[in-house]
Length: 239
Image 1 (cartoon, one colour):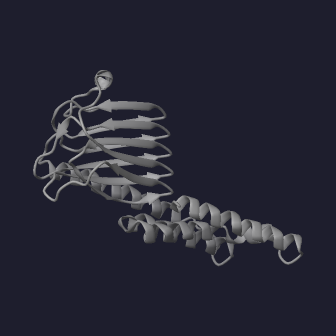
Image 2 (cartoon, helix red, strand yellow):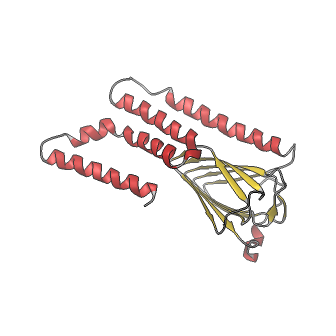
Image 3 (cartoon, helix red, strand yellow):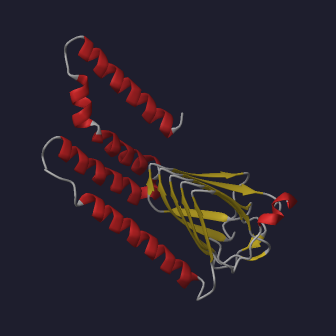
C-alpha cells in the first residue's frame, strides 16, 4: 500500500463517518469539515516527515501552512495574509541557493538551463561531461535523458523545479542519486535496476515540487536513436 492510498483511504473513512453521524443527528458534518479541513494539510506534512525524512523542509512547510489555516478556520487569528508572502520568500531563497550551489560546484562552467512552461519537452544530452544546471516545469511535462553523459569525481548538482507538472529523468545505471528539497503535494521516485557502488559518481538533485511529480529512472545503455533529434549541447541554454 502506498502513502497516497493510505491517506486517501483514511480520508474517505473519516468523511463517511461524519456523514453517518450527521444522518444520525449526532453532528453537523459540513460545519466540521469547513472548520477542520486544514488538518489534512498538517497530516500530509507529518506523513512526509515520517515516510520521507529527506523532505524535512517540505514536511515542516506543510505543517506550518496547515497550522495557520486551521487557526484561521477556528477563529484564533483573523488573517493568514502573512503566511503566503513568507512561504513564497522561503521558496525563492531555496531556488536562489540552489542556483548559487550549482555555479560554485562547477567553478564558473556553463550548466544546462531548461524549461517547459505549459508545454511538453523531450531533451537528450549527447555524450560528454555533465556540469549540472537547472530545469523548471510549470503546467508541462519534461523528459531529460542523461544516459549518454559522464560525471567527474566531484559529481554534479541539478536543480529540478516542477509546479503542476511532471518530470522524468533518465540516468545511467551506475550513478548515485542524492535528493534533497521540499516536496509540497508531490512525489519524487527513484526506479533502478541495481544498486550503485560506494565509489560511483554522484548526481545531487535539489528538488522543489508543488503539485508535481519527479520520476528518476536508472537504466542501462545509451538513449535510443529515435531521440537524437531532441539533442542539445550540454553547455548551451535551452528555454
